Image (tube, rainbow, N blue to C red; front, side, top):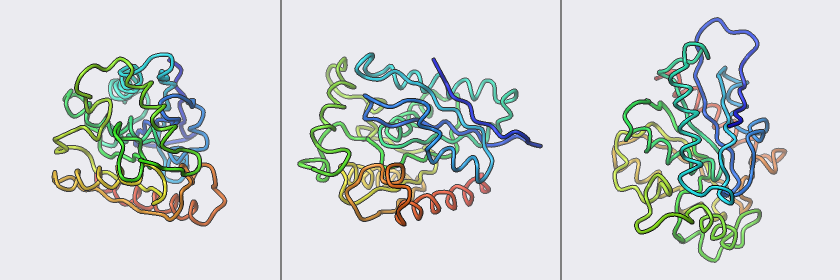
Length: 250
């Protein structure tokens, strides 16, 4: 599996390791999207080792292929932390959209497997819920909407029979305890607005620290697609500030 590695040219000590997962509704996208992602921005601002996997897309291999691919890279980061120069106490998992959904599911999976300690999760406007929510039902937002959301989930869950596991759709989890700190942001007019807020609320009820910022608009992935806007700049600056504050506490 192709995996992109971003690392600083010079470093004097071990750095946080960030697994950054690209978006695309589980159906599209590529690892090279990391070059315009917040994962790269955080690494440039604060110093980190970033890995971005070319995970299996659902039209070729539905769930659990993408999760297994991402966990394999996370496990590689853990097992090879010394040679990669990664501080094993500072492993972060993040991503945009479907990548955010995979990031959340991966944190649940890693917790349950009991081998890898994820210190922080950054699932931005994540694709978490395979069922319609108040905001994803009848949504006509720009870039992503109800029709496309149904299309993505239909293909991703093609081989799932019976009850949908939380490793496929993190919103199906019933126990959010012992998960890592979470920060996210989302627009109030896009499909994933409600499931993002619900995820943060579920984490908080389980005693997990979680924060969310809400921005006005209906453009999904606004920070990547409209980076010149004040809203996008604010969102990314806040993300970097939150990251810096919390990575120092770990």
